[in-house]
Length: 256
Image (cartoon, rainbow, N blue to C red; front, side, top):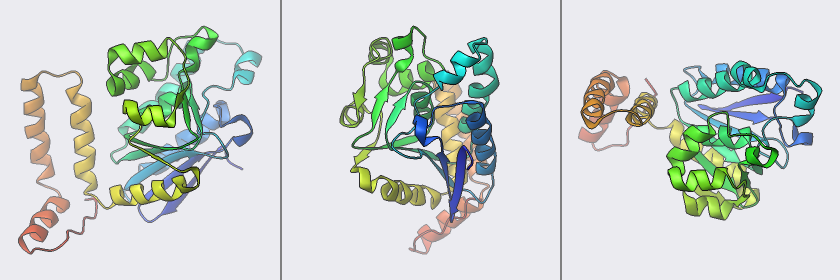
């Protein structure tokens, strides 16, 4: 079986990390399979993406057995495998939902935080495991977690290695929703379908605006909003949205 499996339901593509015996820890094969899945997600027919894990874990980061057996430069490993996949994930012009079904630790935590939204099972946990083995956060953790939680809380958490429960993650704003374990798959599918029914190009442009806002001045952001609004008004979905409003009916967006 593939280390990352994909399935389609309408406009929703689900990517399942598939190394359940090791809680979906990353090795070279999983990186390559995940890269192929992200390439599949770029299809115009895909309008929302769900990322989850097989078995009882989401992803616990690097497979330390592989690292121990091939102790090469970890920086090169990050540049060659982790960085391209995180960048490809962020470049997807559609909403990406993490369905966190169990432990998300180390680079698995980074992966979850790189997604646009996160829904967690009640049993899910979130662990910045790097410091526990003398490492620093990587795979975008310091970028994403700081933006989600603020610098002070993110730093305190990242340097403590503390295991965060799903309920605590919800309280902190790390996840947007927590559901019973046996409801997670269904709820993630429902939420993804809602996202897939939205004007996909508008969602993609909004993602670009939020990313741009992290490093721009107010004047620069206002200008970028104006530029992308001009792009949005050229889409079929904009024309459909206006027509539906004027005709007092529900819009039928097609993601174009």
